[in-house]
Image 1 (cartoon, rainbow, N blue to C red):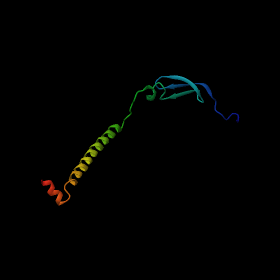
Image 2: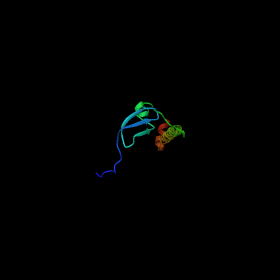
Image 3: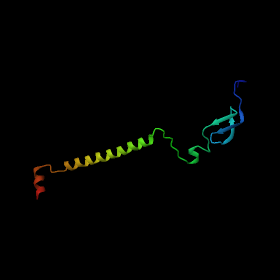
Image 4: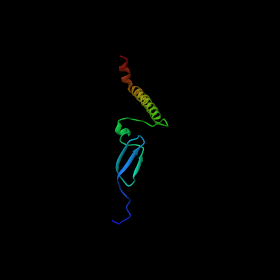
Length: 99
């Protein structure tokens, strides 16, 4: 390795989170400021937070609802078409149906 080209390594670098949690680790910076840590991250805390500024969840749910209603009407049309096709095909079948 070449001398004097590597950054200084701090064994006891302090990490400070927005939530107020502090812990030490090794880094090339002496103090690190982070937005999420293991104390406040939703994955580790078990919380489920949705940041939905553009109401994307509601838009998706509305699309899902429209799709289910479309699917139901399409299925009803297919069943109606099938019932129409099930009628008597020949004159003999029509006459046999009169009895």
